[in-house]
Length: 219
Image (cartoon, rainbow, N blue to C red; front, side, top):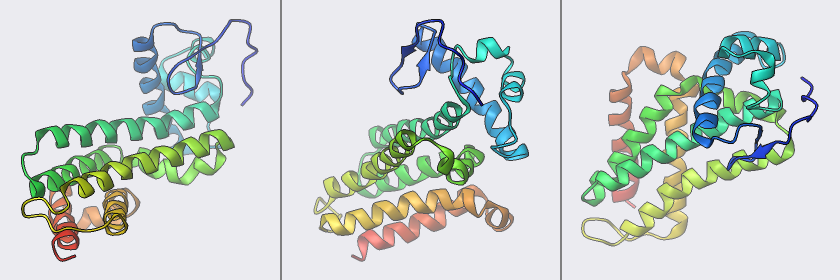
């Protein structure tokens, strides 16, 4: 997919993807509309067979309007990844604000994170299937965002370490548990073809929470 010739001056929003629209709220709203429509196209037709015209039609835009919000198909793919990370980060931070004690904090983070992975399971699966097609700068950004989300888990564990009922453990242990939380949430998306036939999402969360808390309290 070729980028549109830049006849109009593009503005860059916080995600680094060029846009010609100056209203940031409108940009976020329209881009989420494009992202959600495009995920279904990528899943149904594949990344390479999905065209700009298909994206515009599914999103409810003309080709010209689409190019006001994104410059390329790779931009759309990056925005899919960004949407996942943004939603996860928001949900996890809400769980941190709502929790009152150590175990409840970890359990709340797991619950909110896993529910986002369930709600956005197609997005998560797509992100890992087609991130290889992103330009190097976007690949690096996606990996940075992945580590940023996992670091929320790690820093929370380190903050709770040795406080009250929480055992004391080092950064190496916290890092391993944090990555376990991250991967086990995503596993629901990767293996949902089987797991969803055996467990509801709430049952899956319950089992995995017990497993993760076991790693913490038996360390």
